Length: 162
Image (tube, rainbow, N blue to C red; front, side, top):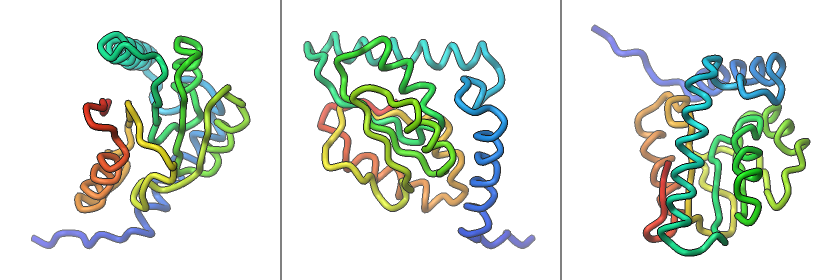
């Protein structure tokens, strides 16, 4: 049995085309990365609860959060509404989704279009890094490991990866 050879360009095109369609069809709604609203609400509630627990345990609301693979900014917007004092950053691979996030003009939130495989292009380390449906969209195991290493390089000691 032969194993299919990994082709980075073909896989990137597959992912980019999928998320370009998501950007076109769902714009800035919460359905952009998952259509099941119960699951989406459960994820957001879990993440908000985890951020609150981190703040409670560390006694400091002045934390920095990276949403790695921020999509259309839906989650960043929810975090901003719940935690107006945190510093937010978003990194998104798909240019069209990054543009939707930038257009939201989320207060105290820097958005960069980029590729986690090339590193995290922010000059700070983060208290919390969130990756919803990001690793699964990287279709090569070695590149998944690289992304996890890149994330760990910018996560503060005792930081939280969600």
